[in-house]
Amino acid sequence: MSTVALGWVGILILAAAWQILAILLHKSVFPTFVAAIAAAYHIVTGPALRTDILPSVERTAVGFLISSLLGVGVGMLVGHYRAVQQWTATVIDFLRSLPTPLLVPVAIVVFGLNGKMVVATIISAAIWPVLINTANGTAEIEPTMMDTANVFGLRGRKLFLKVILPAASPQIFAGLRIALSVSLAIMVVAEILGGSSGIGYYISNAQQSFDIVGSYGGVIVLGLLGWVFDTLFLAFERRLLSWQRGTVGGFIDG
Amino acid sequence: MVEPVLSVRNLQVSLRSRDGSVNQITKDVSLDLMPHEFVSIVGPSGSGKTTLLRSAAGLRPPSGGQVLFEGTPVTDVPKGLSIVFQEYNKSLFPWLSVGKNVAVGARELPVDEKNQKVSEALAHVGLKGFENRYPWELSGGMQQRAALARAMVSDPSILLMDEPFASVDALTRNHLEDVVLALWSESKFAVLLVTHDVGEAIYLSDRVLVLSARPSTVLAEVKIDLERPRNQIGTRSQARFAELHAEVLERVEAAGRLAVGIDGHVD
Image (cartoon, rainbow over all chains, first blue to last red; front, side, top):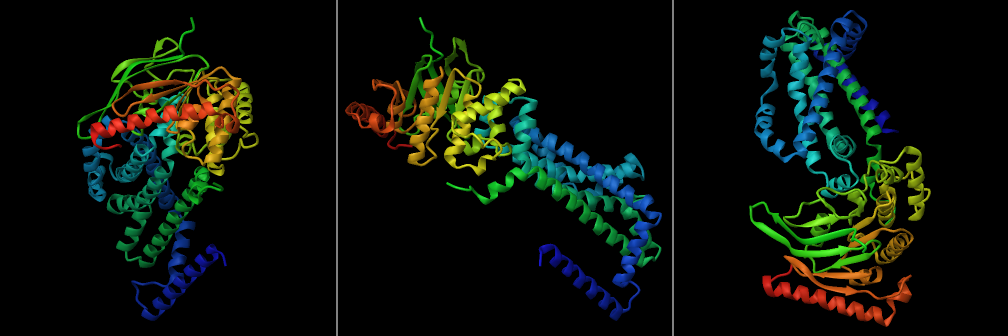
């Protein structure tokens, strides 16, 4: 059997275990798997799709994209220019060690209870893995490769776009993938702490109004969202880094 | 009078190490490279051959002295100067196909002419039909030929080579030497080759310069009066080849011994 098929078997076993356990325990705080799936289905087919799910998807995507662009751009500068690295090292270390949920109250004061606040909070957390991986990837580019770029006249903007960006891309993608899951997690946290819409708001709202099954449904939808994001990301990465696959396997001949 | 294409005058390079101490690599190196001349630089390891080449290329500003390319002081890598590095796997861009890697050397040409030039260059080094392969799909020798094609595609007036064949096996090295000789004799470019292989230096060159140990100066210049065209077996089995080999090797070893005498160790 293929890996994909085996993966589905794993999910089926987990679902069955959940279902049986819930029936045996028979507690209202622990609904059955079927009930939770029904609630999830209700969310994605009902009005919550437009009022909560899509706004959350949009915030995550926007927050992630802005973090990626800023992180890659600033990261390349930090990694390439020693002076920039020296000037920014302490600031970056300080900012990235701030626990992001603590920034939510500040973001609420600045932006209000809305999507902008969520996006800003996502950026404040997701930019760091991208920036730091990009800076490391840039700093670790072989000197011979930089010399080569210089010899063939790739300087200034061309150096960044045609040499540094592709040369550092394996590390950049590692950072982007972390940033994607951070974006999703911070989106939920920000919406729970101070949202007026979104999947996080939906889950905490359901929980506070004793709609236990509804909050389980929300969690399942959130899990699916994360899976879809990650799958799309990996497909994109595989496409862009296809040149790299052979180097992992070594040379074809001597 | 014919002007040299590359003129290195009293070049002095010092590197500052992490602890702030200044390390003098070359003390006083001068050399002239005439058009279409093939000159090799040999010397004990650590004698600053690579540093010299990088400064000559404009990749590292010298601490003293001057480098002139076709009469103009070098401040940056001049157009018309190309380099082949030892580490082809770090010099070819792994995300580009072989054809696109070679095209990097001909960036400034219009597309039609560029494609034409790239195909010609690849054919010259025997890589016709490998345009769409990635560097990692090729053997080491083939990768270095691709790097050679990239360096040659822009018709440079100087080709600098930093131990270009040190990372391949002996048979491949012989083959690559002949590829370079063939390219060189068909074109007009001059070559400055850094190598630690005395036999290779003699086989390829018109002149061989022997560097002293660090901080280096030019210890000796040996004219290679072997007739051209040369070939691996015929040329290398001549008595004159053996004489020249002994002469150069003796000077390199003397330079190495001198270093031991001064520093107490060889690096």
